[in-house]
Length: 242
Image (cartoon, rainbow, N blue to C red; front, side, top):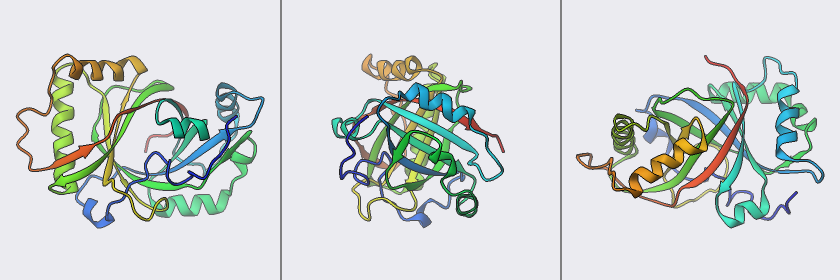
């Protein structure tokens, strides 16, 4: 559907850098393998999602499979890619062993072509509402200006709880780069906010637009400079709860 350019690693959603040892104090979540993909001519994302949900899976399948459709992202991203594929594993060991065992057989049965993959370490900050098969998601990149990743994690948690107390109970993750992608990046981490619909995540932006400041009263020493939010619609293909 779109011309694939030379932005494979530059436009990966979570192409950011942080030393892995800095994140060891966090409560570990999933290892997520991210690829940006194009859809073959003549097919729609809805058709690809339906086909993917019909595929049989075995014990080597990822614990979670999500197709993320860009709604408001960079123009460069939408000119080169149709969606983002996110595969969730419980650990690096499991990711490696399962992928070596299964290869790319499932992807070969879908009319898609994907670029080089990168991995992130996803750390759950706040557990929000229950997710349906299709959700809304906000993402942004951040660079530390003071403090550590651990203090940033705590600050994000406090802000998330303040939003929840004010009626916006969405799930929030902090993501730190793992394997692959750019060798250098100005970003230390990204924030991912997921709600049950696009409307619920847009309501959070409206809260701030209307004057709500969830960061007020937060005494954390952490500081970060963050970019603009991007909006995605995420389609769940598979999810098992461990």
